[in-house]
Length: 205
Image (cartoon, rainbow, N blue to C red; front, side):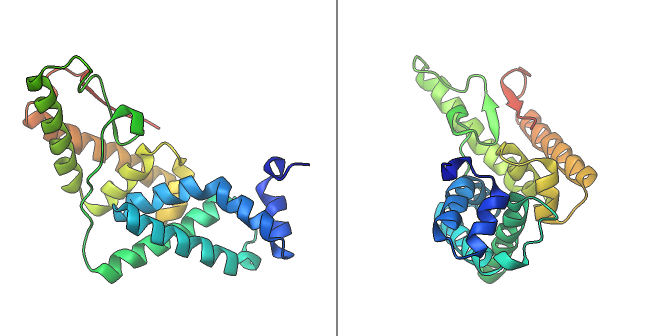
């Protein structure tokens, strides 16, 4: 059977027995989710790469402690988030979120449309201003709301997985995401960007 068809539990069992190809398969399978979680926390692609590498190394070292009480993905994401928090504390600052809002990037917001190939210079300038305002609104959120929003908006994680990462109940995560969206929309409204409610849609995972 192709290793790509083997489920995580079997790959973990093989990796525990010294099968390096099995752990490599786990890395390949979850690398994107791990990197996006790290990026949500630290805001820099280079820092996210470092956090992801640390997380996979720790996961490999701790593989025998994995009890299967949650999915391997959830366990791995929890390790990733803890490493990202350590990274934040070591740096002693909060990262600025220079996030893209282009629809093709599956980032925080869908724009309908911010700009098209036939946009005028004025429309392109307005789209750039909106992106800047979204970044500012997100940066102004309290950290717990910002974390929940950034993780939820990737579309990669369930509320259960986010809750496991940040150690909060599912209901709390749902509230944080909802409140973060409300605060961001309020900021955009006060700056005149949401006169047309269809212009910017907050993605609901």
